Image 1: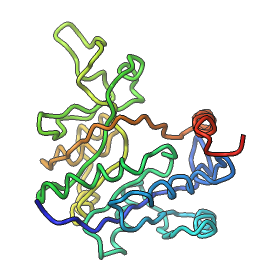
Image 2 (image 1 turned 60 degrees about the vertical axis):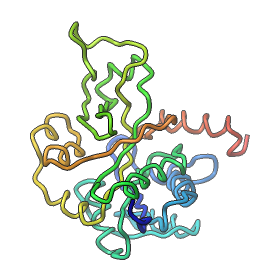
Image 3 (image 1 turned 30 degrees about the vertical axis):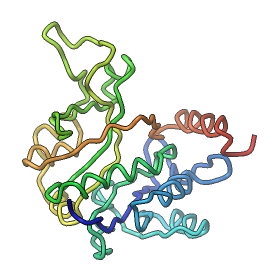
Image 4 (image 1 turned 135 degrees about the horizontal axis):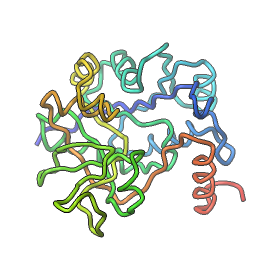
Length: 254
């Protein structure tokens, strides 16, 4: 077992969005969404530092206003690239977490779960999370990414297709062994810099899933199953759903 790594959490936050411009600053019960994500992230027991990585001064100003730390990256092709650019400027870390800025329902223990496999396996370079695949609608939807893994927890494949299938066709069954992927990632810092320099791969391009680049290049990815449902906010409708959930939990004004 290796020693506990030094962990940097990076929250990529792009202001422009075709479906939801200004999304990181969307109000959720009196706070911008990015603040909800930041405050939940710093509660992780295994994350030493959290930084909001953004291309927009408005997000920098909002982050510093609530006491958070921000890093201005300039234009980046993807969120992963933004995380890598940020990590390159923070050399005193061993592991980097990609904490999606549109996941205001994330639990701090989810970030702990991204880090622990690195403690147990010094050769591991990448981790992610999933939750039990419990709904037929998720199994059928190409907007829900599925992940299957081996008995050791190493990912076999990510897909938008209904996975796993069956001899009789891809049909839903209760207790389906696949997971619904949760788009949070952990990387060894050096591997992250390698990954963003690799060319896009065939399955990655076919599925539109950047994480397949690691698998297609022979790298091991560990997935931890978590009993938490999250909502990645991509639309105003999903924002409204998050607000109702948090209000029901008593986390804001009535």
